[in-house]
Length: 135
Image 1 (cartoon, rainbow, N blue to C red):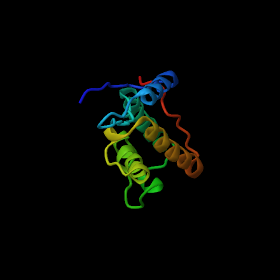
Image 2 (cartoon, rainbow, N blue to C red; image 1 turned 60 degrees about the vertical axis):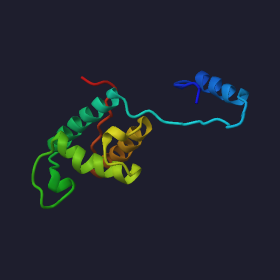
Image 3 (spheres, rainbow, N blue to C red; image 1 turned 30 degrees about the horizontal axis):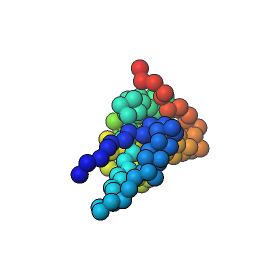
């Protein structure tokens, strides 16, 4: 099977790909198109972990330990790993069905953050912007 590989990252590239598809002959076998969205970027991964740290600090500074925020039987201050395990991952699984942050695409990272941020703001008056740059 011969063909070409397209990496579409902007509107013009998308238009070029559509034009290419429209100009193709079906021939005996037709043609195959596979669409994939890119996984979350390294920068998004770093920003997620920075967000875990920032949110952990804000919750702890506000006196909202795990017992106050999530579970009555867990009296301990927040840390980034706990944010990931007890807040990010459950929301991620509910929204996407995925169990690994490595499998998230770029849009999903934003959607998960929005759900968590809205809940933290409404329930605990905690506002932590998602980092746009890491470190």
